[in-house]
Length: 261
Ligand SMILES: C[S@@+](CC[C@H](N)C(=O)[O-])C[C@H]1O[C@@H](n2cnc3c(N)ncnc32)[C@H](O)[C@@H]1O
Ligand SMILES: [Zn+2]
Figure (cartoon, rainbow, N blue to C red):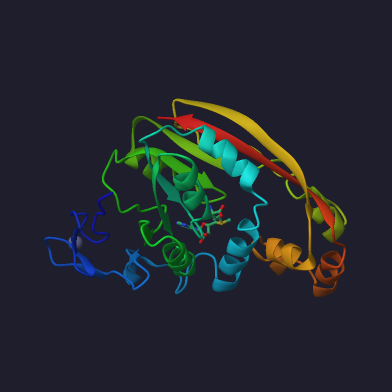
């Protein structure tokens, strides 16, 4: 998929190791093969998005297959030949799986350069860029499918880049997602709010994807906690006690929603 210049919105042309627009704005392609399309003047923080530790933990945890039943369900919603943009793609794990299992063309953006670097490293033929969900570097009506798994909701931008009749596949945590972990860490547990933040698509249908898995090792549990906000919100001793309580049965609960434009 062609990129637009994040500064002037003209088309970017690919040269040997950079992208350039007709007004001369240039963006280098990193050695891993991704491009950073988040200009400094548009950054609100120096190093936005998930940090290096969270990104590594996410990749290690996902690569053990814990979320694969969810990815199977996502793949069932896709059709041959569709082009898909994964917004807030993290380490690109879902995109690699989607490309392995379907004939869908997937590319991804994330605001975290740590995530995008890892995604590009793991998928040298893939197309990954550092960019914000709120300012997507793509022309109007570029994609058949947008994928949004636990990532920011920028409804106006999503409606802009999606083709008419295209679909937004949204995944949010179901009410009991990681319930046992919360019960172990907190005195009172609040169930997740399953409502969608999207209101302007023409229709939506949703399914619950719920399964139970035992977290096999303390290492896996630490990775799971590190990729979520729990690690940072929880006292060290509570984290230690939960990490030694393995194998630890956990509910994975997701709402998979398909919104049509
Ligand atoms: C909970 S993670 C989910 C990552 C991936 N979708 C997955 O499920 O493995 C949320 C991701 O959104 C990214 N993110 C946060 N704010 C963003 C923004 N404004 N634009 C694009 N990505 C953003 C983070 O860097 C992080 O990788
Ligand atoms: Zn430009």
